[in-house]
Image 1 (tube, rainbow, N blue to C red):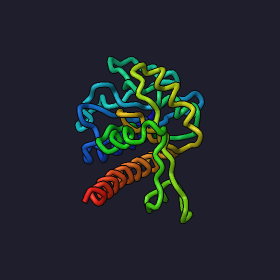
Image 2: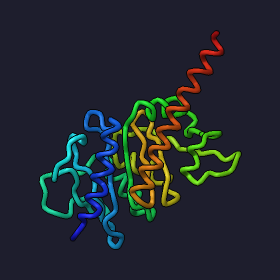
Image 3: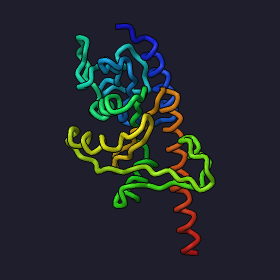
Length: 208
């Protein structure tokens, strides 16, 4: 099976996200669709330093998340989340990163189960063009048992693009293409950083 094009696209996304320092401590994982019938996708190998770029960065897996080719590599822990993205939607790429901003946002709004973002230009990345539009990103609990986490994640895959925060864990974003997934992830991170800055400024004004 030839998947060089998808490999190179995912490697370039990994390079850009690594330049933003979004893979601390080998955290995070990325996936890109290779086939749809049956579902196959490339996913980052577990435990690799994603700031480095090697021939062992990704491995090809099936719809169950099992390696298709003979390899000593293990797929990333959250492969089951990517699996649901590709089996429950027509998305082409799925990205999962841990940042300080998305972790703090997930904790602040975790009890509400959602963070609502509005009055911000970057929600247009999600095709939110109306003056009163808002973007709701669901927040699920961080189950240590990955199959349980994946089952909590699955119901939120309602479109070919989307995002879900895992409380004190990270964010998974998916899109129809690698470009769209990366654009949505960048927009989310900007919005989270803005929201944290806004909360800080508001609290300062209240206490002054």
